[in-house]
Image (cartoon, rainbow, N blue to C red; front, side):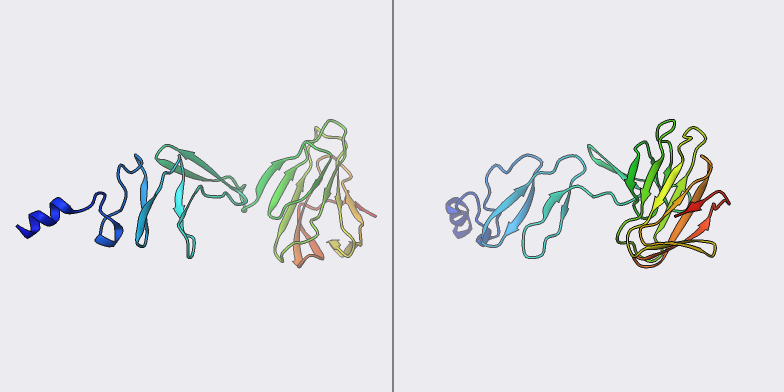
Length: 200
């Protein structure tokens, strides 16, 4: 009879200290998160969310963050991760503006407007091995400029362009790939170089 008496007199909801959740009518579809001796907290997730660990605190409901060359699609009951990089691991940007600071490991197709010269500025900080590619197109007769910052140098062959200098396309379809060889300061053209490029 002691067991029946305990059951009849057990407080509801059963507290966490007695092995329960301390929660009555928890939120539909919610996930209960323990709170020590306090009632459980309820986490309700939206499409694509996961519980992300947080040292010393409740996990946070959040979606994944896409890095360079990656897209993430969140739907009911699913997360789709897609590689959007071009061959060689470079993200692709169809550049339609007239000025842009280049992002590492990205190739830019110089679409622009019909006769607008596009200026591609190297970032002030770049890790060794970071790649930057400019691809000219026949439809943009303005071509492009690769603009250095102060204290940066870019080599095409043995010719060095330095300290806020520029490399400029000679023909609309000129293209070049630069790789950072010394972090933040030095870049070397490794592919797609033509004799039409000019430096200042």
